[in-house]
Image (cartoon, rainbow, N blue to C red; front, side, top):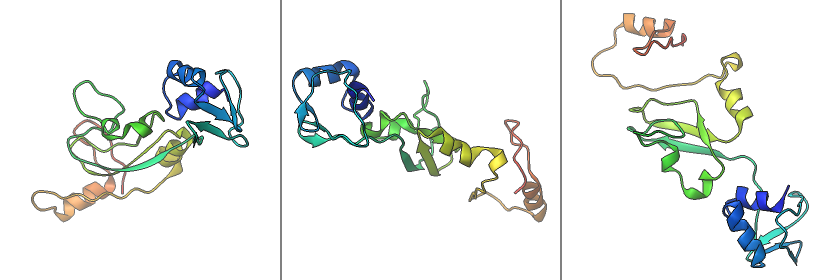
Length: 164
């Protein structure tokens, strides 16, 4: 992997900022100062230091969040705060996205990752990954209501919820 790409992917800055770090002699590979942004490094075998501190390559991240009500499960939105807006900057450069979604007014566990295969393995209907939801309702659920939910219902937005 190119050194400038590694450093920018690990949050050292934009490629332009990384070039300035290299020019200043702030980056070492295997104990040698490197100034060439195009130099290739093997992230498995070579040690990269920035200002004497190790730079560790991490391809994927997996985050758990207790999503609060009022926040949407999206990566960006022009009107509402998103779950990405709640993250610390040191993980946003990995470009995580929500695995599934919780409605805006719903709170609870939400996974975020940048691993598309992991997301697919959990969310694809063909994978049959069981999910459990807890809901508090106003009023009383009748046995008829419970049976309708268990059989699968159509939500207000037209989404057909699968039987439980």
